[in-house]
Length: 296
Image (cartoon, rainbow, N blue to C red; front, side, top):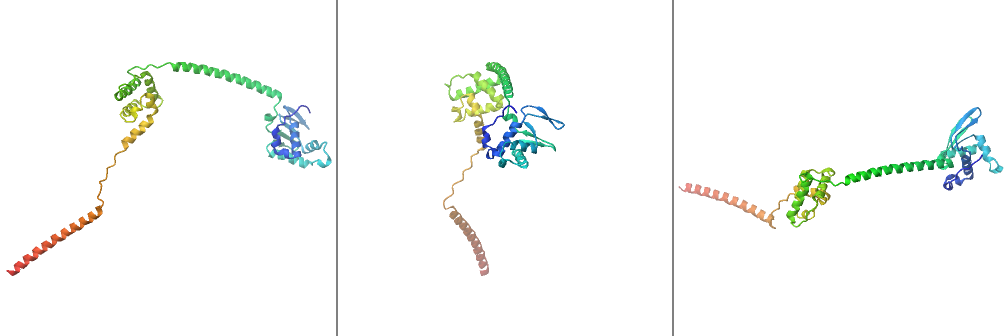
């Protein structure tokens, strides 16, 4: 056998490092595995082996692993075969068994045992992909630069456009509160109005209402001094507008006298006393009339 295999340091952290028989078996599997596809004749059967595969059996496995070992260190065929099956259980290899032979496949062979040619091919492929990606990126950058140039062209809004009219409306409302407010860039304000309508999905009627409300509010009329600020605080303004519509002043309760209950009971007693006095007077007059009739 010629060539070499790669052995990674992380092998020292695996379970096979704890047992010399498992370690020897794993080294054997790596060294026996094929580094390229080839056909192998087993009896009268031609078998195609892929990279990372090799053919073995209980007898041949035991013979190879016990070769050169002192008699008291040798393992039986059953023991070596059990060790191999344990490696399969631990996810290190697969065993495809037949009545005459078994094909062992090392898992992650391509990840750990790439040949120099494969690495060179991979590097070449990666370099080509990098060049391709770079070219694609350059094309995208050219398109982005072109789009930036197109988008960077300043829009000019007609004075009769809804965007310009709303921007001008805010400016005039601000002037009512501060006549010394400097003339803003209404084209820039109009563009911000456009963003509110196209991106934020506000319609002209909503923006108009919020503009008028903000410039009559004691707090907001000193803070909303541009369309950009209006856009930034729009949601807060709407919340306060809705809160102002729903919050109704609660009726004040009339203050009751401290001794209200006492006063009420006294009134009830007094009222009952009047009713009693009235009934007594009626009876008295009726009795006096009867006495007068009897005297006659």
